[in-house]
Each structure stands twice: as C-alpha cells, then as structure tokens.
Image 1: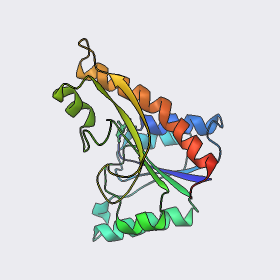
Image 2: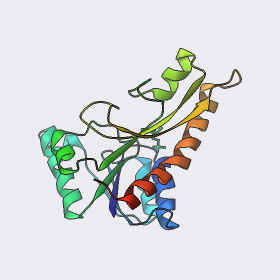
Image 3: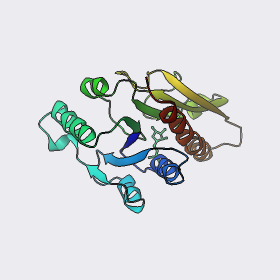
Image 4: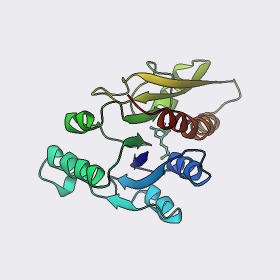
Length: 190
Ligand code: GRF
C-alpha cells in the first residue's frame, strides 16, 4: 500500500510512523509527507528519513477548493492508496473525501466524542476528568467525528500537570498509531 502523511506541525507522530515503515512494522511504502506549513518541523523530520516532502499552503491559491485540488493531484500523481493525518490542522474537503473514501485516518488526543477540537488534552485536563486518551478514526466531513477504529485510555492522576499529561498522551499516540496503521493497511481497506 502506498501511504502519504499530512501534517502541519512538530511531526512526532510522523516520526513514529516513519520508523515503523523503516523497520517494516508497517508494510508498504511511505511515499511522501505533505505539510500545509512551510516552516513546520515535520519537514525536517521527513528530510532525516529521506521521505519526499511537499509543502504548499491555501494562501498560495485563490480558493480553498484550488488548494485541495492541488493536494488531490499530488496524491493521485503519486498513486497514493491511503492517507494518514498526523497533526494536520485543516478540515478535509468533500473532493478529497470522495477521492479517498474510508482511506483517510486521523488521530485525536482525547477519547472522542469527548473533547473534540484543537485542544483535546487541555480541555480534558481543565474539565477534571480522571480518564482521557487517544482516538484513531476515519475522517468524514465533520470535525473529529468519523468512525472510530481504536481508542486507548490513560488515567489523569492528582500528580499530573498539563505537561505530564501531554507527555503520556504523546507516548500513547506513538505506540498505537503505527500499530493501527499497520493493521488497517495490511487487512486492506474496503
Ligand atoms: C497530536 O497530539 C495529534 O493527536 C493531534 O495533533 C498532535 C500532533 O503532534 N492531531 P505531532 O505533530 O505528531 O507531534
């Protein structure tokens, strides 16, 4: 399976995924990394792993539709079968969803449907829940709403600060995201 990762930021999940391809824990090929932010650190990580990297932003286009058309072209030209979002901070538009039905996966740092949106970890911490976690789900037209594939939970203890909780969540992500991607891409997608 030919896989592309889309990311906007730091890229620690991208790196966990790239390592899993390198050790063949995920079979198939990590074909490219795309970032909508030209200054994203994830681009440095892709360079280190010698993964072809591409970057353009909606600002480079007259409309969001044209941006997405360019992204779609990039994915189709590279014969991508499966798209993994790893901290990609944009809604996926209808054209891309239709081009890759059930073939776009996302990770969110809370137990959905609790705490969707941009600040899943902080929102759970501030609310005072005792259990939070991560959710891996297929992407649909909503924000953090698509069919759930896997979840993993972690306790928030009295000793936790927002920083220690963030660390726990990222560890869970780096452990589970590559494994779930391996599982899905190996089984094949419907
Ligand atoms: C992760 O917490 C992920 O759940 C969310 O964005 C963050 C990306 O982190 N969607 P990184 O860029 O992979 O380090």
